[in-house]
Amino acid sequence: MAGYINLKTRWQRVTTDDDPDRASLWFNLFLQSGSGPVSQDRLRSLLDGAVNLPAVQLSEDLRWKILLALSMLGVSDYGSLLSVERERDPSDQGEKFAIATDAAQPEAHQADVECSDLRVSLAKPAQQ
Image 1 (cartoon, rainbow, N blue to C red):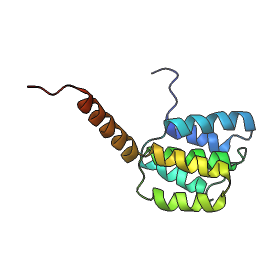
Image 2 (image 1 turned 60 degrees about the horizontal axis):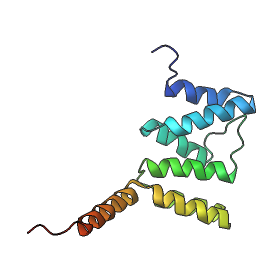
Image 3 (image 1 turned 60 degrees about the vertical axis):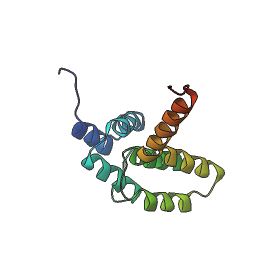
Image 4 (image 1 turned 180 degrees about the vertical axis):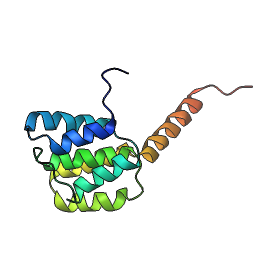
């Protein structure tokens, strides 16, 4: 796989690159591609302040994007993470992000699929 850069390398570049533009690109790539427990721990470490990125300022929008990624991954402590972010950002924009992170949870998606399946089955004529 020529040209493939693994997740560990992406994380190293996010945490060491001092150029804001490059570091932001690496951060966004990491955010979109992380899926396992190690990625989840790294994202949590950014939210709780255990890890600071030298060239990426964690704005409220980026914090919400991190929580969105964690929500999509179905982390077990999502509720407590959401509470912390809601307290940090009680703005209207924060509330919109909170709604989006709720909707992104795997359980929310599954419920939507089940409702969609029900609508389809109700729309079909009954078999005689």
